[in-house]
Image (cartoon, rainbow, N blue to C red; front, top):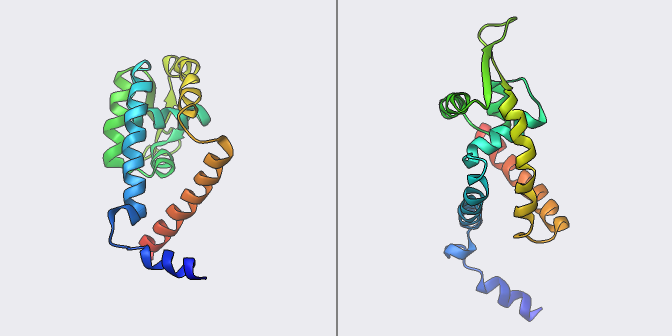
Length: 154
C-alpha cells in the first residue's frame, strides 16, 4: 500500500513526460520519419500513402467520404488529391447522379503501386513491438480519439 501512494505522489501531471499528448506527438514524429524513408521508393508522402491505403481498400470513394475516413477537411484533401492526380495515381470525376460530389478512383498506375507497397507494413513491423501489443494499442488509441472527437462535437 505504501508503494502505491509513493507512485501516486511521484506522478506530476505538469511534467512533459507525463503528457499523453506529448507521447503521441513525439511518437508520430518518429513514425513519420521512418515512413518518409520507407515511402521514398514509392515516391509517396505519408498523407499520400494514407489516401492510397483507403483507395486500395475501397476504390471509387467520394472526396467527402475520404476526408471523413482520414479525418481531413477538404481544404487539406483537395490539394493533396490534385497532386496525386497529376502524378497519375488517381482520377477525380464528378458523380453523374450528383454533380456536387467528386468521386476519387485509382488509375492503373495507382492500382499497380499497391504491389510495391506491400513491403511497407512488413518493414515497419520489424521496428515495432509484437503484433498483439500493436493491435491492443490501436484499439486503445481509437477509444482515445473517439472520446476527443465526441467531446469536440458537444
